[in-house]
Every structure is written in C-alpha cells, then in structure tokens.
Length: 198
Image 1 (spheres, rainbow, N blue to C red):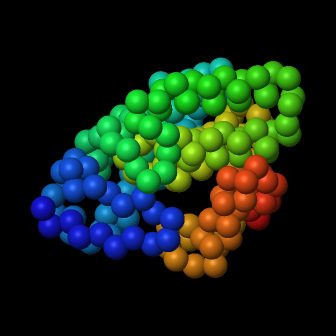
Image 2: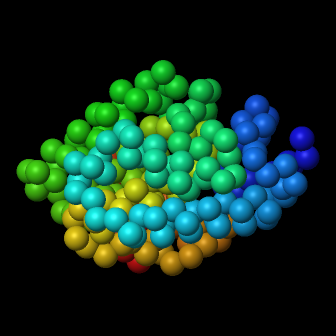
C-alpha cells in the first residue's frame, strides 16, 4: 500500500494492518489523508449541530461510537469500531468498553449532582476518552467533538474554541494543548479547561 505518513508530536501512529482499512486507495500522503478526513469530520459536525440530545442519549457507548463513525466512515472502514490492538497509550483493548461505560456513568452522575461546572464535566469527558483511546485513530479529534456535543446540546453552553485552529499541525497551539493534556494526566484539569475556552 502506498500510504506513507509522517507524524507530529502526540499523534498515534497508524499500524500497517490498520492502514489496510483505508477506503480511498489513491491517498498517499499525510496532507491528502488530512484533507479527506477533515471533509468527513465537517459532515459529522454538521450532523451533530442538527440535533438536540439530552445527556443520557449522548453518554452512551452507541452514541460515542456513532460520532466516530460519522467522523471517519468515508475514509476508514474501521470507523466507529473499537481498536483491536493495544497502543502505547490507552487501556487494554479488552477493557475499552468497561472503561468507557464507567466514564459515561461518571459523567451522568456529575451532571445530575452538579459535581463540577458544565465546562469541567465536558472536559473530563474529553480527557477520559483520550485516556481510554477507544479507536484505532482520531481519538483526540473525536474526544473534542464529543465534548462540544455534550457542552452545547446537553449542558446548554457554547462549544469550545480549542485555542483556535491548528491542533493537527505542529505549532504553539498544539504545544499548549499537549501540555494541558499532560497536566490532566497529573489530575490538574484546569489548564485543559482554560485551553478549551481560549
């Protein structure tokens, strides 16, 4: 297969067997792949904006998978299905569903009991999804869209700005984002919340 990808800091490399799931066989560069994925993601964002879902509809395994499927199904045949291999990050492949159910149940509890602010609940969902890393690829982009869906549809607040544009390129904005993710790994969530609203 002719897909030769370069990775920037923080991107999960795509295994050779996963590359076999590429639907558009003429894609051969990172730029081409990014372009097709972005077009697919824009359709998923448009789909998500046409809905108004309560949190108990959003916070389900099926909905989380559906968001990923809508984001990547025109490019990858494994879109919306949990990864079948272990990565250098994320939970064991056999534990994905269990961890995801636990995260979603936690989010429901936080909403119903007003444990955290609306922004913090959505960012905790985003960060939890990244930690679980349920899919072969696209976990960061997927987790940001899920946070945007939760905050705007169920919690009635504006979507996040995520520091503006450029998180898929190596730049100062991505450096700030990855730094905030590392701090969240140490249970310091405030920088990630602040970044999401910057």
